Picture: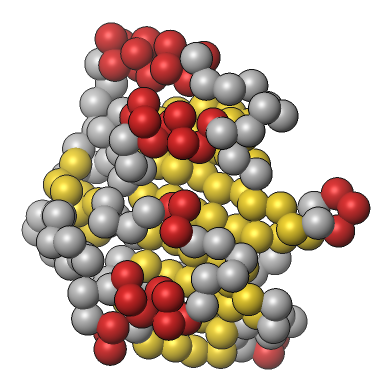
Length: 182
């Protein structure tokens, strides 16, 4: 297990900054629960596309690739919808759970220009660079030896990705807080 911390600037591939705030409106919570209930059950696949079609692109996400049952690569992800204070957890494109998120302390700039489905095991560093407004903004570092993992970590433009010898293993987008001291 390892932890990575990212401090990055804002901006985006399409210039579509989204300032979001959270709400605790019960009507919205009910709408999210209804939408989640209508998604494909686990094992039927295709739910990720349904989530995008129903809730739109996530405000932030984490995607990981790891060995699953039988050694096959498993895609695990969490898509965060900050205004709805809701996170959707998916495994190999199936909805595993819909969880509440802690409300934000204030508005944030969400990196909605990134598509979680664009991050695949075969995604390369050059593919990631092409997603950034300024490809030179992507900086890299090696994971410290004390972590016991052989990773190269890249950060830039509210995006963090990690590659090991097999390829992409981690992608995360990071909303930036708006306001005093941010």
